[in-house]
Length: 108
Image 1: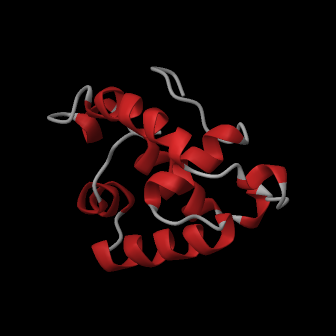
Image 2: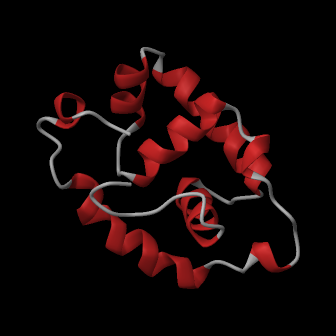
């Protein structure tokens, strides 16, 4: 999860984005009903990136926090989308939320 220092200047961004992401969830098919997905198939770094995406962080902020380039963040997101059979980053987060891999909240 992000430290207070990393989120300075971005306070509340994740909470503001959580509602729209959950609202968009209704637009995606329930892939979990037909395709088994396993969180363990994501690397530790992919899980970190996915958690930060769920918090509403930009690729640039994710890269800065994890000390990787923005291009590397995009590569991790591409791998996450393939592994979760997600159409985009929002769909990946929604899938992870539905599977219980992520939770939204102040202490998630």
